[in-house]
Structures are given as C-alpha cells and as structure tokens.
Length: 112
Image 1 (cartoon, rainbow, N blue to C red):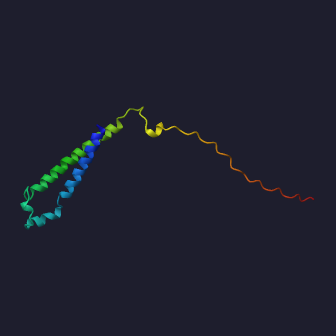
Image 2 (image 1 turned 60 degrees about the horizontal axis):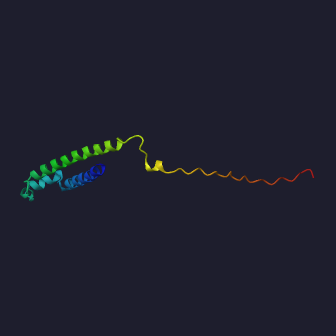
C-alpha cells in the first residue's frame, strides 16, 4: 500500500507540474483579446483556462490528501520496530594507548 501511495504521489506531482506549465500567465489575456488565436482553441477563449485551473486544483487537493496519508502511515508504526542502523552490531571500543610523555633529560648537578 505504501509503495502504491508513493507512486501515486509522483504521478500527481508530475500532473501538477505539467498543468501549471500549460497554463497561461495573467499578462497573456491582452494578447488573446486582440485575436492572437486563443479563441480558436478546443475549449474556447476562456474555457481552457477554467478547465486547466480546476484540474490543477483537483490534483493539488489529491496531492495534499495523499501527503497526509503517507505521513500518517509513516508515523503509525509500532514502537518495537527498529531501524537498520540500530540492528548493526556495535564494535567494542578499542583501548586507546596512553599518550607517550617525553622525558626531559636530567640537569647536571651544579655542586660538582
């Protein structure tokens, strides 16, 4: 189930990216008003913008809901489950040798 939701999440993200890239910006409306060919599209002059906007909103809602389901599934794991890192055997700490302290040469006796 988790794998299916991850694949669905990637497909939703790709769909949102594609739909956002297909949409025209706000500044493109002036060009359409003077006959730049937008009125001859399949959905009409404003129909394509409404269709793409609504489809993007639906995909964004599904993306948000799927994200919440994935987050719930990840946090709803039993407490006794351990990670792979915790299962690795721990190596005993090697005894570190004490650092060698250099011995200073003895000073000659001044009384001689």
